Image (cartoon, rainbow, N blue to C red; front, side, top):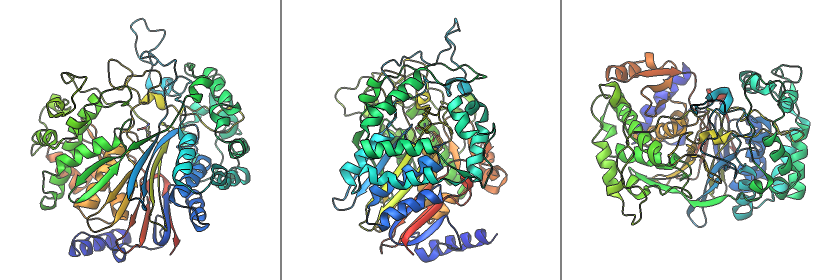
Length: 599
Ligand code: GLU
């Protein structure tokens, strides 16, 4: 109640101050999810991980050092969302050269991947394996992990710490243990059948056949040993040494223990690990109402879809519309952008994506004209067909000559992953999303090494031909959208979210909240979410459907589906006067943690 009142007060003040929220307008309270101060800031989903980042900053490290150390700690305390068994995307703002770069640490398909890899081998008609649990809990779903290589690359290019130094706080956490919270327990409980199916996972996370209890101390000595090996011997131990051999062995022969579902093996070898390399890629830049937003490009669809939605919205003066009309336009722009995302985007090293056309103003203008005052009336139109960006291409050698006939169906993606943001006293900023795909990844802990392998290859479209079909050495299309934005008044904002394909709509929603509605970062993150991904229904945070906004959207023809939670985001702002505001979720995923070096 008090929060609602303060929120309204903040909003009123902000509108009064012409939509540029100042620190004084942000309700502070004793809220671990909001921190205001100086000297550097961190926000993540977990207070222990955030504290690790703050300690790194306090001892002289920069934002990249802090991002890696925080992520390594999340691999211990948040092991079902992220870790060295997975991948991720990092967007970095380098203050001294005033540049944004991105590092692609996405998992990669092994040489044995085929377009048929998710077909049921026993089905004469080539039916797909059921998504849950057959496709997500096996060796075949495991992509070559990129996270560790990404940490090493980020540190060697832009950090000041060695990998060994950045891993030390996480080693201590894994060795000495940490207090189990309700989120940790519930994530094990929701995966209990999968985790019990693999002996290594069962013995680590279901010690007496059930999850540890809230308040217990949890240690992971195997992970401490693994991090120590990496600290001492470097990442070759993972990509070319004993850890790599153990990964390949586990993928090829998952340590099954009477699984109640089919567990197919993967074909990953040490050669696949040896060949893995992160990519440093340019960011996708979108201009929106005077803001410059930099987000992740291919193989993530995040920045491109975000950009397409915002380009469509730029044609509406949202500030003059009422709330239902604002969110109606957002939903419709998302529907159209997802049709294009699903049809055209894939790993750019394999697919000639018609990017110039998709990113052109003229294409956005055409797509915008498809947005009416109401949701499409008939069921067929509810799923938008992809647009045709080809006539808008300046690319002299597009491989496609015609758009695909139908929008590809929405794929099922996990709802896990984690996002963190860091900034340092120099003004560098990191926005970093990392994942093992599903909550609990493949469910397979590498025996003796204490970390869970990803199931990222389920992000491929399992049918072909398709730009996102599985191929050897290809990276599955992602939705991750770590973003850094520069406001016309000099503020620097960083934000991002977990949540599979809802990441894109969450990031769109935060951007609209920040830019069009002028909300401060904490309100922009805490606000209810809506997610339209060209799948007919629009998912909303449970409860919104019954509120005035939900009812008004329903009256406009939208079909709203309440879901328990969409995206546990984090964000930060460097205010024009240098003050830092770090923000985590107040409630989602149990609430996150934001801190600054100095209050
Ligand atoms: N695999 C997803 C992606 O790369 C992330 C998983 C999630 O957020 O749940 O888009």
